[in-house]
Image (cartoon, rainbow, N blue to C red; front, side, top):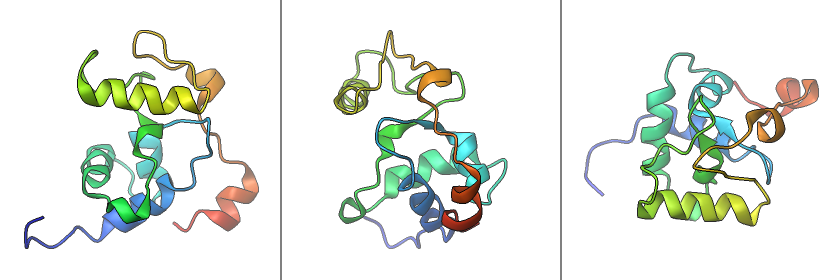
Length: 117
């Protein structure tokens, strides 16, 4: 890791991603909004790449707004994300996840009492 300081918003993103329940997914923009960083979907992807292994941030539960895994189909990262989602019984067909079925929709108590931003 470089000596470059970590973006202070990364912690907000990591904390929010840690709240995604097993068997659910969220998209980059949704995480940005819930972390109090509207319009910062790309920052979410970047932050996930810098997440310390010790935090065990479930990065694989974050997908793009079309319900797809963002890595190229067949790539090592794609296969890893697909496999991790499938172990949580998330159905992945051709790199796509049905958002109607698997998207995390925080309820009112989560929005008010669990999410920090």
